[in-house]
Length: 306
Image 1: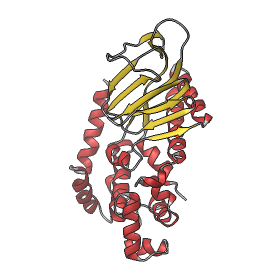
Image 2 (image 1 turned 90 degrees about the horizontal axis):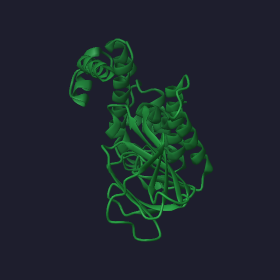
Image 3 (image 1 turned 180 degrees about the vertical axis):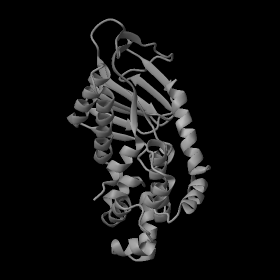
Image 4 (image 1 turned 120 degrees about the horizontal axis):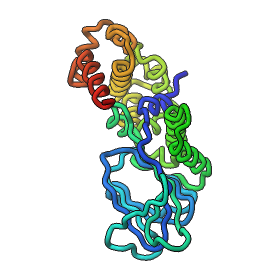
């Protein structure tokens, strides 16, 4: 049976953009702005105060791992004493290795930091199905995965891009399924923790082209139609039919971007009996016909490669 969490992470298509080892000493304050890319870090030594997207600062200590699916503002400061008012300028020590604060003496703080982009047109909607912030404490495997990512990013070994992508997918899956707060946040992860709603999600992902109706999904989940609709909507954050449309259109856009399948083939795979019906649904969802979407995507990727 299809695994919705694996499907979602694969659809996000994470692409590492930056990774580095940060060491610090004394007092320091780092402030950054971002366009919504994912941010993740693992504290190896010492502690710091971190504030993401304007939220109150969180104390991070050695062994903590943090994942933010969409980052817009980021502030990181030394802990224990009041940090400086001004912004600290990092000192480059080597490839992917910087120091903040005092430039002399041993490092009091060590942290692996990484950023990645989600290469999918459905980024905003998928990110909305994930927790805003994930904090995992005392699980060594995250530090190990991060060390592997950092080591691979510094090399030019054959297959580097594929290894980085798979390591990053593994890091995301581990983080998402290890989040202790899943049951408090509506989204795909909370849905997968609900015994009955998880059945519906697995069925939709297993066969997105089936003629799913709320009544049929409710029966498969051993629930009444009204109860299934209410619980699914509250748990996942969108109605069953909204989720089905989202997943079908996400698969359609991925196929249009990456493959050479005819539009008729994509239409049948995603639950539409004709190319014209798919054209109408896709245009309403994406704001343009599927053929135009394919042409624009190809043109954009060609421009990026130049």
